[in-house]
Length: 190
Image (cartoon, rainbow, N blue to C red):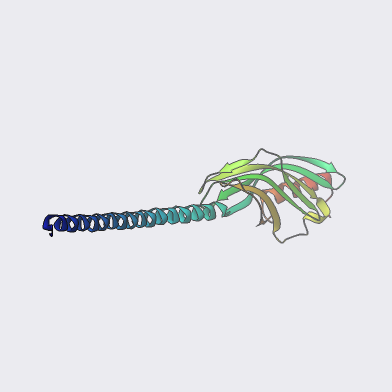
C-alpha cells in the first residue's frame, strides 16, 4: 500500500525547508549589503574629518607677519660709547591663524635687541606692539646699513612653538634716529 498523503507531506516539508533557507540567505545578504553601505558612509565621513583636521593643522602651522621699529620712548647712556633705549616693535599678523609672540631677539656687532614685555597674542589680520630694549654701540651701529635679522619665538594656535626670522630695517627708523641723537649728546659718534 502506498500512502500518498505521507509523500505529499514530506514534499511540503522539504519545500518549506528550502524556502526558509532561501529567506535566511536573502536576509543575510541584505544585512551584509547594509553593513557594507554603512561602512562606506562612515569611512567616507571619517576620511573627510581626517582631511579637514589635517588641513586645519597645516593652516595653524603657518606663521606670516610683518615687523618694523615703531618708536623709542626713553633712553640713556649705557656705558662709554653706547646707549640703551626702550621702544616698541610693531607687528602685523598676516597669517591664517592666531599667533602669540613670546620673545624677540637680535644681535650683531653694535646692536642688541630683546623683548621686555609680556607675550603678545595677535589674531589673524591684526596688529600690535611688543616692548623691546635696544642697545647701540655708537661707533658701530651707525655703520651697519643692511637689515637686522630679528628672531622671534612664536606659538601658533596648535600650541607649537616656532622660531622665525624677519629682517628689520633700522636705517631711517625711530630707533636709529633716537640712538644717534643720544650718541651725539654723549659725544660718542665717530
